[in-house]
Amino acid sequence: MADKVIIVTGAGNGIGLAIVKKLLQAPTVSHVVAVDLKIEKLESIQGDYAQKLQIVAGDVCQENINIQAVEMAIRHGGRLTTLILNAATYRPLGAFPTLSLESWKHAFDINFFSNIHMLQVAWHHLQESSGSIIVTSSRVSQQPCESWTCYASSKAVLNYLCGCIPLEDPRITSIAITPGAVDTEMQTGLREEGTASPELQKFLNALKAEGRLLKPEEPAAAFANYRETMYLASILSSALIVASVARSNPSGQSCVTGVELPFKLIDGHTHIETVSVKGGLDLPKLTPGVNASTWDWWYFDAVSATDNAAISVVLYNMAPNSLSIPYPGGPLFIAVRVTFKNGTSIDKSTVPNLGADFQISDRGLASQWRGNTSLHTFTGSSLNVPNPIYTLSINDPGQGVVGSFQLKSVAPPHYPCHLNRPGVSEQLFPNIWWANAIPDAEAVVDLVIDGESFHLRGNGYHDKNWGSGSLEAITKTWYWGHGRVGPYSLVWFDAVDKSGKEYFSSWITKGDKVLTQSCACHSVTVRPWGKNSQYPPIPGLAGPSGFNIRYDMGNGKAFTANFTYGATQLDTANYQRFTGPITGGIEGKKKHKGMALCEQFKY
Image (cartoon, rainbow, N blue to C red; front, side):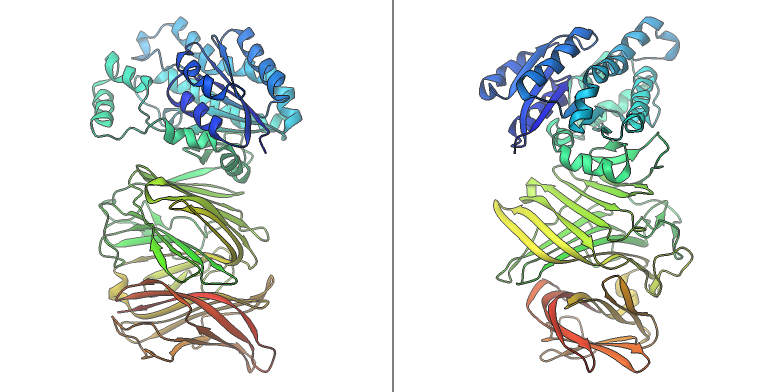
């Protein structure tokens, strides 16, 4: 339904023009009002969108221009749902003593006070529509930079305004988006004016020469895909969004902190989290980051309730040679495997060479992983409330994958031997730790893969592992899996280290009730059956017919399950991941059916 009516300022060029173009192509947008002094490029596309695009030519510092824009939105669209406040100037640029007071006033008139007036004019319309406000921010508003004092200050105060807006009226959502370094006229001016410091000038020149500038269309997607962007804001409260992921909330209502994951290893020692901390179950576990001997990953999957269709996504932050995965030149890698109904699987992996980040508040978390032509994001609501929801979005046209999947948890989060609480051990195995944010979930997957729709309804899962040293050097064999068997949610782990010692972690819930959780010896035992059922398996051995899984629930009770091979999602000499049907139940009681996904390592 096309019901969104949006005003975009600074719409005549660069990011603003790219936003307008994306909005005009969006089926949910009925009208776009574009505001700028320079309207030539807008006029050149108006003929293709005569009923959808209205243009206001003028300076946003003139109050009549803002009034005209709002009146035009109401006249053509009947309401106003979104303001995208992108108009700005980066001038004056230079050493602080050289900047006149008049130049400061002029910059703040454009970058700040013009937005104040637009908000005043549009306020009651946004109240009526429970509307949204998106402003363009900048990294220098958080990380001060020499020569950019005026511009950085104007953007910082804009961030603060953004944080205050929902306190004035909770019906209105507000976020600020930092687009990053983008190949626009602003970047050209910064390089060519020669007023930057020598170090900054060198940096700006390198961005262009090394091809590290984003195309305007890339950050424009974060503005135009406002449904997803606003969902992130609802998770983390009004926030500063870094290329579509929440960054900061100066209002103080929900303190947001950020963690950067660069596309390079750190030198020296890193601290590994081994004991749980409050609110930290799903966060990066290595401080200050991954070095030459550590690794950290986030795993998501969804399995159809009726056939072989499945998807798994693993976000890696890893040292070379740590995980038997080819090293892509930096520690970040995203493995995407899709299995279709007929059992065939394809690889859609990519390299987020522009880095990743996490933003965390007491309302949840958000993360984005950026590549030259890809953006993978995930958000999660707080794990301290029942049935948290995670959404993972993929925008990777280079690999032909666009869409998202959502997981609504049906089982509480936990660590290997304890529920989610601070002060408990996170160790799963020698030098390996584990946290299970979503042991089982209702999964909804909607993707377009190579131009074809891929829809899945079934069971989902999300966890994370982290460790020190090579997984191959630590592990002999490793069985892990999860499944939905009637009303029961199962997670199992049974592994043997190089010394021959076996480790266990069992988990069964029924609804939100935990029936068993234990790391005791043989609390859950997993063994292959049928063909290729040698135990322990050796490298290169083909997959078995299935697995027998037995949980010791204590007091003489046991839960037994039988997994039968259905399809192979991934198969290497040392690793296999399978999907298929599973049956099971408490011994002596009714047996149930369902679907499961499981894996085996063999070194």
